Image 1 (cartoon, rainbow, N blue to C red):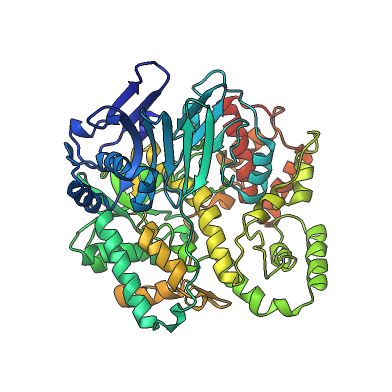
Image 2 (cartoon, rainbow, N blue to C red):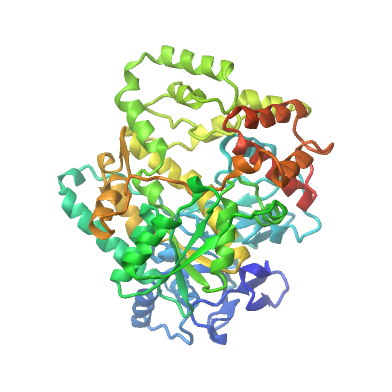
Length: 595
């Protein structure tokens, strides 16, 4: 895992040899040797390894100094250590930032592990054979030659259904992820593990509708300004990921209002106008006078795929990992830290799913449930995967008052059975697992935005950004995920300011009207994508996908795969599904994983 910290390394073993912790360092705060990890408290009985940033560490440091703590470094690592010594496991309530850490408390005989509220920083672990093993990336656990490399079938079923693997589930049998906003205590004497949730999204405040919209807008701007100001703190150069969309443009505007003249970066596809956002980004950069760089990414070759398959540990169905990696690679030549706009869509209803849920609850709920389920079943049976209108009808079959339909399905149960027809004893349970993760929330927009925060954002968006950036030893921060911003978004912003059947991300667009140039197109919504459909028409990308999926060792049924390739020619939306299968097979090859 050298890429996560190429500048320094360290390890620490207990006197009895039972406990070892190790660390790779990417120096961001306190570049001196006093920031070295593992870090021990002065008496040597408590030690920490930690990945991430605590944005309120200066405030916490002042509070801890009032309690008598003396600091020998300027790092946030030492602040976590002191916070644990002062407040024990309750210190988590005070930490605002992105983090995964492990503290070994020799006196208590425990290891204490925790992960940040949104899930920006990863943490994998294995418990068994009288030991707890953990790492920031799954490949760290795979260094143990005794680890059997076998696919967890429940996790694979989730991957093929949702495009990611949720919660504590892990693609490899025997391993687990510590979920976002969770902590873990391992007792060495009893060899027992306890995992618990230490934070959850706040309930919507029923009294908040009395707050005037202008007051909400003022409060949101204040919180975001504060988040951007704190996240620009670093002892190294900081850049901004500027896509030209509302979220990243607002971050840029707020950074400049705070007195910075940041470096901004955009990735462009000049040969594919539908995917090119350079002009929109340039409008914002010119308006605010940033030091702007455009990174061209037209000639992307498929030999990048095996490298990404190896880095991502768990495969993930999101081809935008490719431009995310490319822009991270280019930014890393200029900066060690970058701010991005991740989280804005989840918090404020920026996805199609939010407006669609509002539409379903306001209009389609009038259609009798039995009729809606029949229409949904007929569409699923009669229309091929990726056909226009298939997903639209599929949404109708959901219980609009309790569920969140699968808005970006990869393979439904029928398709998964066809794909895996050569394998016996398969359990198709992803829909059931997903349904159990839907929050009990009567308001449809609140329900889907909360679901997306805990699932799609945590297991797709943030994983994509963390692995792509850290492969390039670049730290990406997300001001929208600052704790006060998150809690305000879910406690105080009503659904009508998030999404309606005809509009999305309404409150952020109002803020954009305040802060961004008048020529900025607030209605434009474009994902961070690549022209994968064009690339799969022929040439090296098509050859790679075919070579991988028609290989005799592939896990997937050849007739089902052939049908997907035919879908490329007939205009069906199957490119991400082909990406899902190809990335999974490349990942299996990289790590020699069996089914």
